[in-house]
Amino acid sequence: MFAEGRSTLRTVRDCLRFAVSRFNEAGLAFGHGCDNAFDEAAYLILHALRLPPDRLEPFLDARLTRSEVESVLELLRRRAEERVPAAYLTHEAWLGEYRFYVDERVIVPRSHIADLLREGLAPWVPDPAAVARVLDLCTGSGCLAILAALAFPNAQVEATDLSAAALEVARRNLADYGLESRVDLHQADLYGELSGRRYDVILSNPPYVPAASMASLPAEYRAEPQLALAGGKDGLDFVRRILAGAAARITQDGVLVVEIGDNRDALERAFPALEFAWPSLAAGGERVFVLTDEQLP
Image (cartoon, rainbow, N blue to C red; front, side):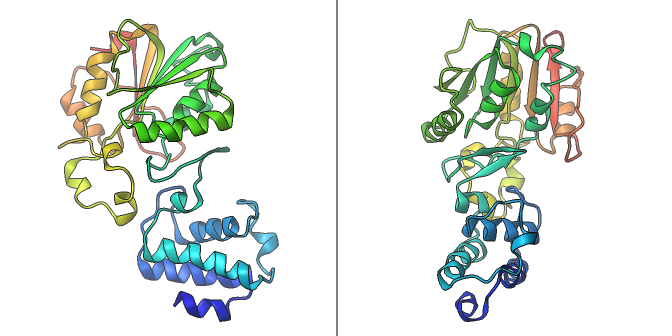
């Protein structure tokens, strides 16, 4: 099917129609930046042609060279036949206007905490300039540590991850943003050797996929590091440990912000005495909780 496209596709519009048909035919799963076949096809085509990712319309009827068609088709083929997430094909992921390098060593950034950092974690953090220390647990690509450094301009950020390979990706992203002096990376299992230090803000997008869901993940999600996804039987193994250690590491008036996916019911059953706050998210749902230092167990 993709071989036929070499002789029949002429324009960006042709490639877009072809890609959407092939993606729908393959029954692809989305969620690594785009949530539908049309947007993902447009993104991959524009990337292959080295065109701005948000400027499809002016180029729809542009005629492509033979080599351009080949480049587009190879990217589309890998997405449809190998089920590689689009972000791994382009080596980039976006959180709002911020771009991050990604590859198979890290999960594709898509944390809802990014929405909250855009507002400086208001109203829980009344003065972003007063935040002095931030901790990001399970940092992966380093995206939340970087966004925290940008949101809290006077803060020193520390970030931990168990995976040495993931931290290599995080270092690359820190260098891209020139934040090596403000973000310290540590290979550690959650809090690791950070005892004695306290933080005004503790963030985490930990592994939280329950075991039953892990068993039925689409191929695109199985392409990501399972270490960064699997959260135990109910998805809360890491969350329990984060909560258990947070009180000893948070400052007075500090806040803990943790993403838990669709596990709110399980979390509230497990911790009925805690008064979790559930911020409004741009995508809707209640997938991130906030606790203040006074509320921590």
